[in-house]
Image (cartoon, rainbow, N blue to C red; front, side, top):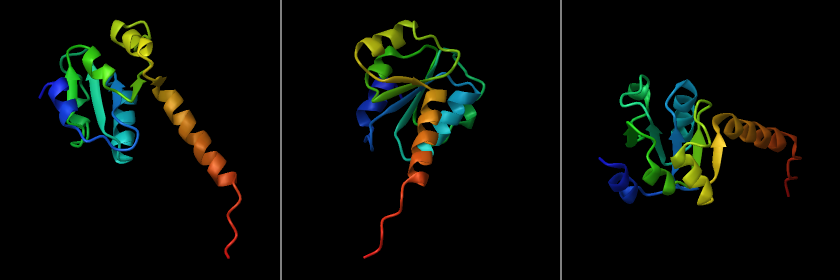
Length: 128
């Protein structure tokens, strides 16, 4: 399945397609987390056969390997990049130029922790 055909057939939930760039250990963790949260997730990596590809959840149908797929990135609601991926990579730079949010895996989880921390400090509403 090509990235173009696969993204055309996806039914996006919530905040749209989340594209993970780089399938190292942190990219794999992000992909698992987002899939578990119910997001539609795609993964792209410059390696033809990333070592950890077999560990991706079955729900992730869009797996584009061999290059960082610029067309796939243009369809993303958000792009999550692994630490080894440069923001100057042409496909990433083009996505940023198109105002597609690009965050690191660390930024994603820091935001999550802050959100959960804030919620835990919020007062509980009083019962009627």
